[in-house]
Length: 154
Figure (cartoon, rainbow, N blue to C red):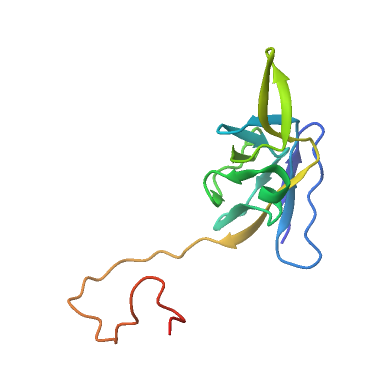
């Protein structure tokens, strides 16, 4: 499958992870995120996803450890209509733990720097869910499995 990509100035080129099924994404500018605040980290590219496909954007396992940030929407979903020339992908983040001190407007701030070229997330593409309809029933006729979190409980 060939997917067209448009890079914005200074962007790190996309490459598939050698051991896995995800593609790393990189910050496209320096951003300081204060503890308790959020920011949109530009990723430096736009994709033309094929019709019927969507992308799932998630943090890397090291993202929190390295920068003290989490992705605010847990997993971002980019659908096949977000394909314009200026539809640059972003990663919305929230800073929980400061890694740096920075003087901004004469006041020392606790937060974290995400620098241009930092590998902060990953994505994969997947086929969208097929068209479905729901049929209401009174009973499934199946045995109950148990409550939430019941798998593996002794």
